[in-house]
Image (tube, rainbow, N blue to C red; front, side, top):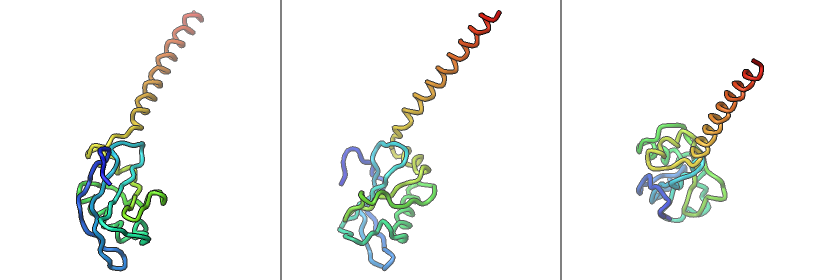
Length: 141
C-alpha cells in the first residue's frame, strides 16, 4: 500500500510476537505531510488477521527498535485509532518528539503554516498597539 504521498522509513524486516510467532513486515511508512501527531503505518507482508498486533508490546518494541536504528530518538508510542488497524496493517500514533525525525525524512508539518500566520497577527497587533499609544499621548499632550 504505497503511493506518492508516502515516505518510506524502512524496508522489510521480521518481528516475533509475544507468543513466539514470526511475522514479516514489508515496511514502515508515514504520509508526507500532516498536522501535529503522525500516524506510522507498519505494513505486514501477510495477513495478521485478528491477532491485534497493535496491542502486542513485544511487536511494538521491535518496531520502535527498528525506528531507533534509523535515527528516531524519543519515547515509545502506542497504537493509533482502532478503525485504522487492518488485517495487513498496524497503525501507531507517534509522540510529538517523532516530528523532528519525520521532518528529516521529508515530512512537512502543515500546522507550522498556521503558526506563521499567528506570529504575523501578533506582530500586527503589537504595531497597532504602539500606534494607538502614540496617538493617545498626542491627544493628552
